[in-house]
Structures are given as structure tokens and as C-alpha cells.
Amino acid sequence: MQQLSELKSAIVAFMPVVSEVATLQGSVAAFQGCLAEIDRLLSEGFCQDDLNVLSRAVPRVFWLHKEWTPELERMVDGRYREPWWFVAADKLHQRVQEAAEELKIVGRY
Image (cartoon, rainbow, N blue to C red; front, side):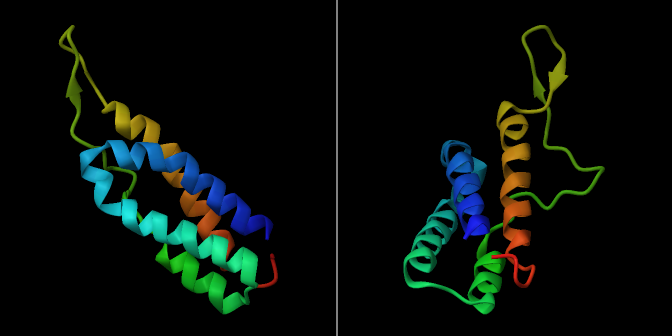
């Protein structure tokens, strides 16, 4: 149950960024579906197969590798930086993915 609660908390924290950024909005419905499934599992009970299915349903909005970075934004002073949404979303997305992976560990609930 703790892992489901952590995943729910992580998704809820991530949703404002996903909802606000046009390039991420395609994932809103999938995350909402995951939240609904978490609530269902918490109320009705679950087995390891249910957790595995939920874990696989959590969308990856970034398929990152160490060399990848989004297009940089130019600031008023002429310097470039990562977009605000990526800075905000990267750590939140990582938390969601880590919580989803925890569900795959047999017997951790």
C-alpha cells in the first residue's frame, strides 16, 4: 500500500506541470487513468499482477539518455537555458518513474 500511495503522491505532484506544458498534455489522460486505478486497487485490493500492470501503464514523458536535452530557451540577456518546464518536470518525472518501478518488486506491498 505504501508504494501505491507514493506513486499517487508523485503523480499528483507531477500533474500541474504535465497539464500546463503543451508538449506533455498528451499524457494527462494516462496519468488520470493511473490515479483512478490506484484508487480502485486501494479500495478493492490487489495482487502482484495488478501492480505490474499499473507500473507498465505509467507513461514515460521523457525517454532520456545522458546526452539528451530539450531545446534551450534564449533569455533576455542573450544566454540560453533549459526550459522552465523541463527543470520543473525532470525531477518530478523521475520520482513518478521510480515509484512505478517499485511496484514491480514482488512482496514489497
